[in-house]
Image 1 (cartoon, rainbow, N blue to C red):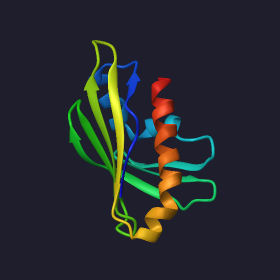
Image 2 (image 1 turned 90 degrees about the horizontal axis):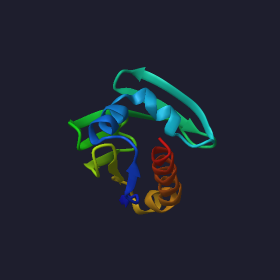
Image 3 (image 1 turned 30 degrees about the vertical axis):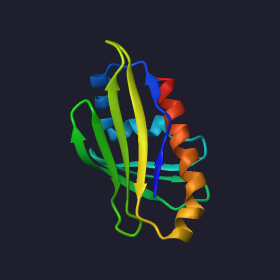
Image 4 (image 1 turned 120 degrees about the horizontal axis):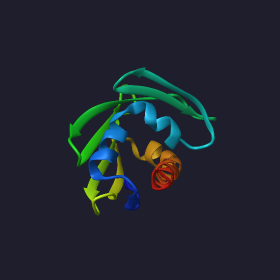
Length: 130
């Protein structure tokens, strides 16, 4: 299953945005309002939960300085990645597109497509406000 969010403009240079996303503690300010838990596990990993949803632990899996960062699930039970593709728009702005990729059975994919799409939209909207 793959879900791609809309491209957004962020008022940070490509390098600044990459460094912001690399610091997992910064994801707390990007989370939806219905977050019930956020905890940094170590410098490259955090766990979060939204009300009514199970906890999800993410860690930085891949970094291509200034152009791409990949967060992945720490558990093999729900294998997925969240990729941020970053491009320079100008000296002080960049473009970002979030992409969710997961390996789910058709029933699970159908159940989570809506909530994941909404989650990506919230992350994107909150990044636009930076």
